[in-house]
Amino acid sequence: STITVGSEKYFLAFHSDITERKQAEEALRESEERFRTMIETAQDVVWALDAQGKVTYINQRGAEISGYQIPDLIGESYTLKIFEEDLPKVQEAVIQVLQGQPQSVEARIYDSEGKIITLSVNSVPDYKNGIVAGSFNFGSDITESKRAEETLQSRDAILETIAFIAAKALRASDWRQSAAEEAQRLGEATGVS
Image 1 (cartoon, rainbow, N blue to C red):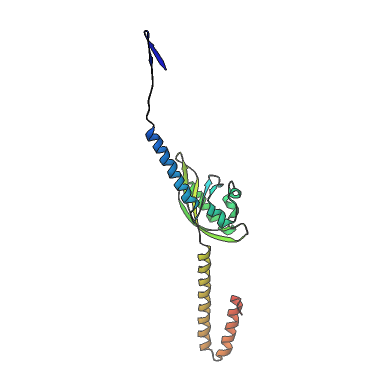
Image 2 (tube, rainbow, N blue to C red; image 1 turned 90 degrees about the vertical axis):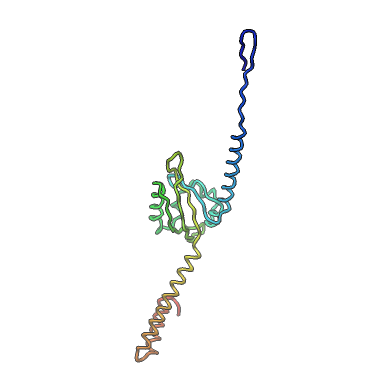
């Protein structure tokens, strides 16, 4: 831009040092890239929901565990894959998160083949401009540990039954007959013959 004062012409120039801004932008880009790498390579399922409960993001681990392709999950309601009995507690947790309260819940989901997967889920609100706009969710696959826990509980029940049978047989006058009857009942109850 030029300014004329009398017969003299002056050129106006403004100089602004944007070095700090460029450095801040580069640091932000690098930080976002590190965060994206961390989420994409996590061993947990990481997903985001909008305020209507639609999936807006899911990491690769989510696709691996569920058997679905990522594009098939984006835009879908979270309720479609939840085990029916777990749906009420999951819906309550989602409501609480959308009201700004982080939640933890254990829930079962169906994978693409109809198998049940158990997840331990932690959910936190996703704020935009100070308003809850959805949620960030982190789920650990605990299916195998739940199966192991159920197996141990089943074994404990069998051992308790055996102890009961042994005690009853020792008290009975015809302990062989009593033991055989109780063993048959145990077999019928556990499906073991």
